[in-house]
Length: 403
Ligand code: GLA
Image (tube, rainbow, N blue to C red):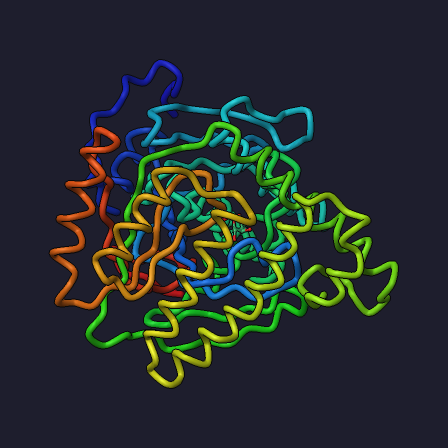
């Protein structure tokens, strides 16, 4: 075994292949590894609804975290992140928590598996990803899901994918400081090529919807803005929702989550809550209906309605939930001005991407206009990601995936 800490940094480029990953693993650890992958996600509509027991409508994308892993027969994890060119080594007890955030995701998954009664043993791993970080496409959920899926497989734990998603979510809560919902981990684990999934986050029932909008493209425009206080602002939104829910539930015991509340119920508690909390709740209640509208419209091939609701979500996230920023609002305005069918901020917000449903014949003009005008105003171009809806977590065999 090589001394990893003194091992020279490996030169790699961003276009790593699975073969490169296997080779780096071999160089670092002197062994073969098994490779697993788990993707990031998009969400067509249904934002900040998951922790409110509402609907989300995500799909997995063709960008993943890839990890080579091998059990090492010890009780320690040795992990090398190719993207950060950093190495971390840690044990599996609570006091062994590593300092690097990326390593804490892996540690958290191990700990959360242990907390639900599974024996986790040590392993070696090398990993990289092609998911943009901080863009709102859930690179962190992909990281958690990769390791949760891999350990479940390598250690034959027989944990179902819902439980693996909860392990990822609990990792965010307990080791990374974000009180997130379940959408991202669910999408990363359950993704199905060519399909979006409508998940009811209160019951965890879901339905696959074929998603192949003929004549349209789905494209993400990344502002490259990363909000430093995004996790505390996110947690604050969640607290507002829980506060409103408590007030409504005091009068209507059938209300378990804010998404169960109606506009009338919200009006009843208006004087008991702050104006800010009222606005947050207005957005959440409106968003529930927008998801249902979009699902109906998709079944009829009515993309105009899909797009209209996407703009509705953007408005709500910007003006009521207040999780947008100037750059995102600017891209949304450009999309509207160009005649793009639907556009909105995607994911938690506070930066990251807009998701756009664009007619194919408008695509080039829209991208060129957005890039040019955005660069004039903010000094850099947004990044463009074309989206392919793909499969979820899997083992990768010889460069091919087996779910
Ligand atoms: C982040 C969280 C999700 C969800 C979205 C907003 O991505 O991780 O659980 O709340 O924000 O819809």
